[in-house]
Image 1 (tube, rainbow, N blue to C red):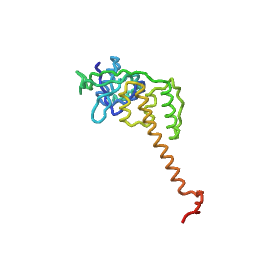
Image 2 (image 1 turned 90 degrees about the vertical axis):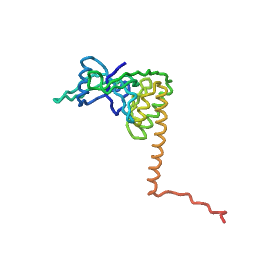
Image 3 (image 1 turned 60 degrees about the vertical axis):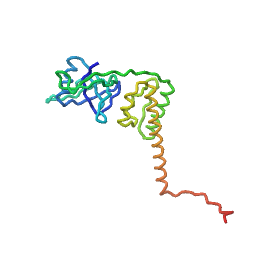
Image 4 (image 1 turned 30 degrees about the horizontal axis):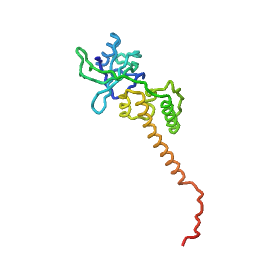
Length: 211
């Protein structure tokens, strides 16, 4: 399939709301074409000077149109794709595009795996002293809190490329275990530093038998 492209240094996951401020002339035209022809477009992830994967998005609403033609728009992310060909400019269009292959997504997780990850997310939020709203396991999937669990840009990009939910949850779980371990060590260090200025009871050593 061929899609128009709007490359960004951002990762968007399927189902995510994507607010965009459109100010470049080529992308103003892209939004006009999306409205007129009811087409979708792709947001390739620009990373390490390259684009290889991205997410198809669909225009939902043009919220504001300014006097100079700039726009605030809302889109929704749909499917993850791999870029097969890239053109800097599509025929008779000012914006880029290319042929993409959509990645299949497989929901192959057990309920226990989901619960484990949710428990770890709740523990992470507790350690960070951030309010956490419980999510029923049957309504949770790997993309829901993907931007809110401390993943780096590179890690989010890795997550985007995983097709199986079991792989995505395993990836998230490994990240959470590592992050929680670091936070617990920091908490222990903070308590140790705080104790340095406090009076503490020490058990007297028994020197009997020492020569």
